[in-house]
Amino acid sequence: MTQYSKRMVIVHWLTLVLLVVAWYLGEELDEARHETAATLTGYVVHALVGGAVLLLAFVRLYFRSADGTPPPIGDTPMDKVAKGIHHGLYALLFLLPITGIVTLVSSDVLKALQAGDASLLPQKFSGVFAHEAHEILVTVLMVLVAVHLLGALKHQFISKDGLMKRMSLHRKD
Ligand code: HEM
Ligand code: HEM
Image 1 (cartoon, rainbow, N blue to C red):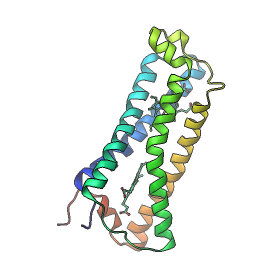
Image 2: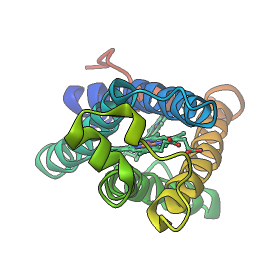
Image 3: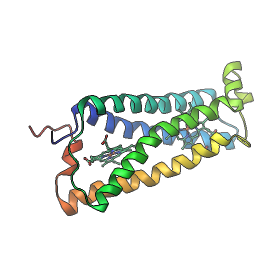
Image 4: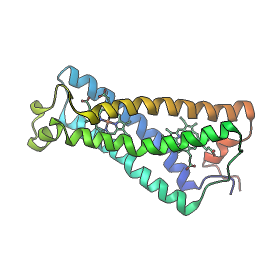
């Protein structure tokens, strides 16, 4: 096995797309809330896209254990850092949606959704710890994805060892 399975590859890139959409919708929501223009639909759509990330994270772990993974490309300290980053990214794929769900259910957003009344949506999330955690984790995600991307670019253009092909739908064999 020299590449990740096709379904692992699909889930990897689909997760990237969903994360970009969830991040964009979350930022829009935050901005709208500050202008008291947030809508119930805004919260529902953000929660659905974020929820899809959580669902895919479970699916991905199942595919990973069922299909296996290609052997590590090396055992240098940098390879160990890359592996640590992968673990961090996996953790975020669970923690981000979970803190999002907790934010929703432990704040007035839930009440507003239950009543179907956008005027009940919170102006502030003061005292909602999960909201702070959610915001911090978004920043951690940005940093880890940036390092992960830089690593992939280094392999592609400096080491030229074909690492990107391991996460490609184009099959070598
Ligand atoms: C992994 C996917 C997710 C990403 C990348 C993401 C991203 C974001 C971002 C960038 C914000 C704006 C942060 C801020 O308030 O300044 C945000 C806010 C929020 N997110 Fe998420 N989120 C995700 C999943 C979820 C899920 C699954 C839920 C709920 C089921 C959720 C609920 C919320 C809520 C309630 C807010 C507060 C919005 C506001 O400020 O009014 N998020 N999210
Ligand atoms: C930004 C563009 C991205 C590029 C170019 C990229 C590229 C890659 C490549 C080439 C691999 C294979 C590494 C290897 O075989 O050792 C990989 C693995 C991985 N990527 Fe990405 N990736 C990107 C975004 C993401 C995002 C957004 C996440 C999740 C938050 C992510 C999570 C992972 C994980 C967890 C692995 C390890 C897979 C496993 O062993 O199960 N990647 N990525």
